[in-house]
Length: 191
Image (cartoon, rainbow, N blue to C red; front, side, top):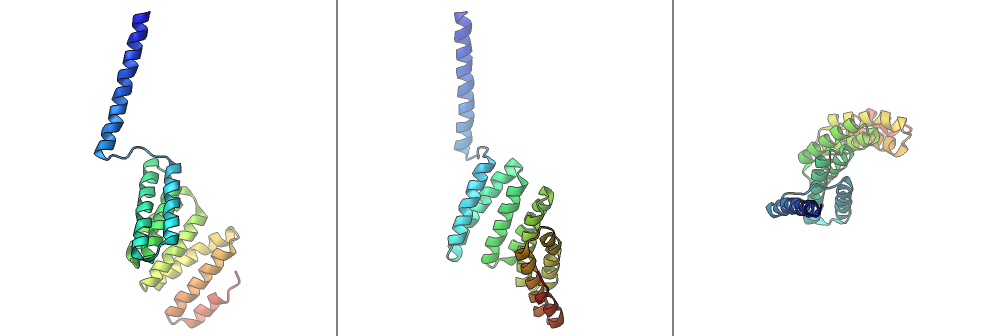
């Protein structure tokens, strides 16, 4: 009986040493250990705080690193809502840095994640952000299309801010195209 108990303790110790050795080797190699969605959210929140406080390119680059870190965590966990938020944040960062094509790329990824997770309000918000980057590269037709696509969700969710913002963005895009009568139609639409 005593021999079995000692053998069980020995086996348990060996197993513990193997597992510990595995994790220490992973750390030494620089492999990331699995992280939770909560950790991803903490990193995303930290990135958002850094983004809000950012002054100049360096500040946005620091936030960008946090958003990439959060994205990796969320992708590892298969957490679509987290992927949506992190890629949208990366889009916002690149928009602020003036890299509109890269912003558009991240917004498209965020849009796909929002669709897959069934988050219609998130999808509408990303569409508004996407329209802003399209506008900055002079693609007013796509900017208008994005805003028009978010209008039904705004109405369905009774989100007056989203609806008003989309209407103003559509009017602004038409204004930039010289289609003033269309611009006025959207500027004067009740939200």
